[in-house]
Image (cartoon, rainbow, N blue to C red; front, side):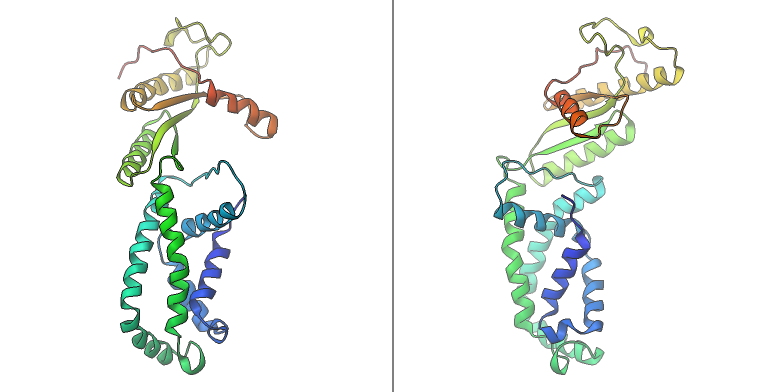
Length: 268
């Protein structure tokens, strides 16, 4: 399934806006929209909470999240704790800031009747979501429920981003034990048992293919050395796109029976 985070943010805006009178105010809606969209990682978080609600109401053995590139993923991982901390602080000071919020809303001419934003409705919306945030944080850090699988290619930038992600996962106490290295050029796919082929024996006259194979061999060696305590899965570059049920099923077998390239004589 694909989640539209904008729809979920809109629902949160309506809840936080308060009463029906307040929610009808175009000015208040615009203000809430600006505030919500200004929060880093709000789109990733709202997507996760939506799936989390569905998972609790339905019966699934495994749920797979295909996350965005590293920057978005790191914000998603840090967001539950950030929100939990922010919500707790907000609940502690809600009584002291309520008069100030009401004065500001009244001055701007927005809010409910008389320009008043009911603080009890605002706090109720926050309190209802706080348990969900805490449960998300708990599940993220429970290795029996959640694990992270990094997917990279054998190039410098991808390896750098992978290490950045692995370090962030360790800091967040999130389990990671599998790394997939995708789109590898194998010297001899037709005979996987032949371990004797070296770089100069690659059966191709394609100069570009040989150059790419040489670069991949360099970084693959570094990945295997850097993550020797993890399960590194090597996947080949295929001639066709992996689309459709049959090709996906065929490709999935590589995840269970990984290709392994023989060591190469690579000049660093």
